[in-house]
Image (cartoon, rainbow, N blue to C red; front, side):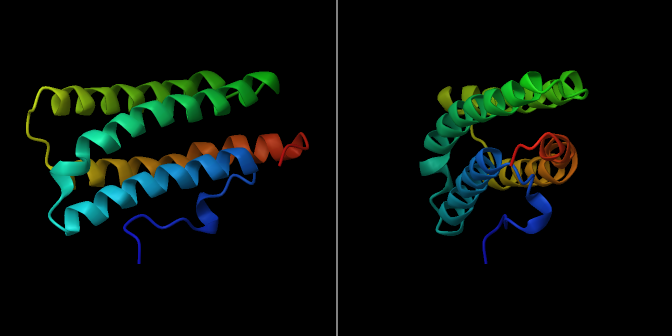
Length: 135
C-alpha cells in the first residue's frame, strides 16, 4: 500500500489536474519508498528538484483554468500555492546547502498538504469548472 494513496476523495474531475495530482502523489511515494530502504537522503535532492519544478507547472495549469473561467476563489487558491512553493523552495535550498533534512518530516508535510489541498480547495474549483463543462 502506498504512503499517499490516490482515492475518489482526491479527484477534482478535471482530468488534466487529476493527472498532475497523481504525479505529485507519485513523487511523495517515491521518496517514501526510498526512505523505507534507507536511501531517503540519496533521493531527497532529486525529488525536491522535481517537486519544485512540477509544482510550478501544475499550479500554473490550475491557475490558468481558474482565471479563464473566472473562478471566484482564485486569489485565495493562488495564496495556498504560493505557500507550498515557498516551503518546497526552502527545503530545496537546505538540501542544496547540504543541510540535513529529515525525510519523515518532509513526507508528513507533503502528505498532509496534498490531501488537505486536493480534498478541500481543489475539489471546490473542480466542482466550479465541472459546472462550466470542464472535465
